[in-house]
Figure 1 (cartoon, rainbow, N blue to C red):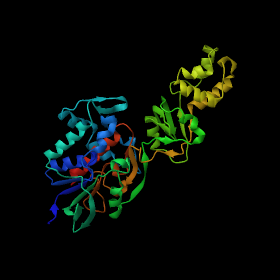
Figure 2: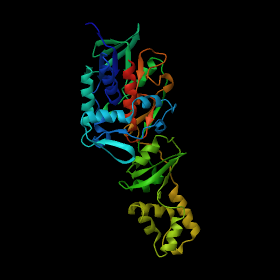
Figure 3: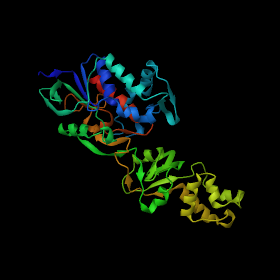
Figure 4: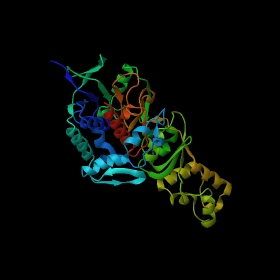
Length: 392
């Protein structure tokens, strides 16, 4: 059987791969879109609680982690959140803005996948879903991709198979394997946007499973103000997921449980409500179970009037920089994304093409560009996918 020829072969039908395919296809390129899953966009479908947090209007390169923090600027300048919103609007998909610039479908994430597939059909994209890639080679200016025993050739190959996050959905390190095969450097990968686990010495907090409160989390000079959630394993919620992408193993994080309060709030509380119990002062500002746990750790009992200002100030400081020492994270199984990946040093920031391997591109989560929680990683997928799709 003779090999099929395409202008571009795209491995991975997630957000970035679909965008690259529809972009190249609509430019008149003959495109083959391949995925071992039986349907496209599986991670899109589960995102945002099933409503897909498809972009963030505050997208900027400084909200991404990379060895080269400037790398993403070019792609973002040429494909903005407004550009993707325009596509969403053309397809009549209703959406709304939640907090912090996050945009969600009013209905289902399925609408985003259907939209992208409709755009791919408009571009005449050929699909090979539910089929496994056995070999990828390069010779005489062409990539040869063997899928279920049949060879497919093309001058351009786009790696869009994502990272290692959520392996139960089929995530693998395939993109990294292929990148290394062709001599591209891969930055050490790790789980990102992932819950923390706590050890036995902090089991008291694990007993608060289900309790959530607004906090500021700190690690080094990085801080996020969002909700934190206690789990039976440790710490989760947006504030913890955000800081996890920066966290380094065996280092502490700090939590401000009183972000609304001034520096001397407990002393002022003593002046204004001297007969109030210390625990009740906490409970007016925090969930009761959390207030009890923090109060127990601080070791202060009774009425505020019976406490020294110095002790109250010490408690204020502890509540503003409460140290937690995670013993790890819940790993790739619970990580929303993979940090690290194909090094940006190996890629052209305008085309996502490998500088030393003609026709090879890497996009989306496969690349060492990791965004904050809240639609930022989807915008990177759209922007990097568009850049590669315009280049092949």
